[in-house]
Amino acid sequence: MNILLITTHLNIGGIASYTVNLARALKAKGENVYVASSGGSLVCSLQENGITHISVDMNTKCELNPKLIGVIMYIKKFALMKDIGIIHAQTRVAQTVSFFVYKITGIPYVSTCHGFFGNKLSRRIFGLWGKRVIAISDAVREYLVNILKVNKSRIEVIFNGIDVAYFNKDFSVEETSAFKEKLGFKNFKLIGTIARLSPVKGIDYMIDAANMIIKERDNIAFIVIGDGPHKDILTRKVKELDISGRFKFIEAQSDTRLFLSVMDIFLLPSIQEGLGLSIMEAMASGKPVVATNVGGIYTLIKDERTGLLVSPRNPQSLKNAIIRLIDDEKLSNVLSRNAKEFVWANFKIEDMAEKTLKFYTFAAKKPHPYHP
Image (cartoon, rainbow, N blue to C red; front, side, top):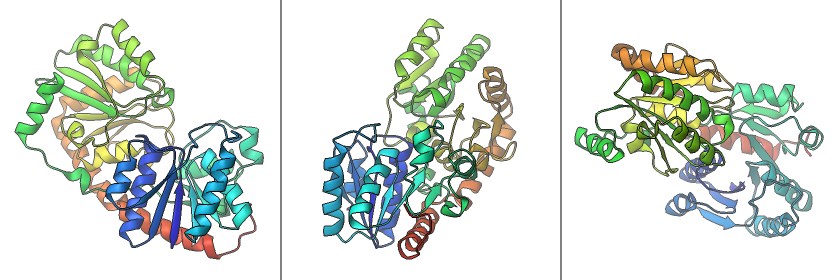
């Protein structure tokens, strides 16, 4: 099958990672895969795997941006030339482009809902979800049905998958020790997260928890890996609390394995989360996880078995969970082992690709009364 994935951009982040991982996995299964976007740092990963990237100027949050007319016409021409059988949209703007390409060419499209949005009237009236919709978790499916009023028969839950073997890399003691020293935290227990720095990721609450912990313990430090619109506000807060010496921000990384290897605990304090790709990667790396019980995170973190769940917007609960794992090495090891086994058994990228391919085949061939 000739498949076209469309997303707004390929800068480091959850949707971009999903798109690239899926493209690579489908390519490995022998499918002809193309990706269209405005570009970004992850384009090189596509090129390294022999996947064609189509560069189009669609890096906007407004689905009515006039420049999308040119994008629609270009994608239409490309899709017909390459005999594309299915188009898979990843964002609202990508859905808009896909909808009009479908109207012109008849090429069916599907979309993935990666999380939660405001209950905008335009979303409910003009959903533009395509023939069928992938929800990345049960929580996202319920959101689609109950809030955005998408008919349940159109939705299929296909969990995100990751290259679990890739995150199973063993680093030597010398490598991790040298890297911790480079970070300036050689003799510290290290608590870390990997996230886009937007308000929904709850990094504010991580900072508050860190402030409490740093005042009580002298051997614990924190790192946050990622970029985003909230970064200046967050860095300013760390400075105002005078904890900069033990709380460090690091720019987004295309390869996070060495960073994960030096973390003693992975923390994700989100107040909204579709599933949690970074949690998956931490679990596959054998890290104990503390995360908030929001969205689809419960799919990954079974409290007291594959990690610890805490209430959102609650720095005290974050602090308590972190200290508990620091002080209870046995529990930390059990959670790490269980987490790794759980991800390996349930969230392999190969399984995700196989289910998505079947989803494409069904959507491309079977008429559906809810087709736009």
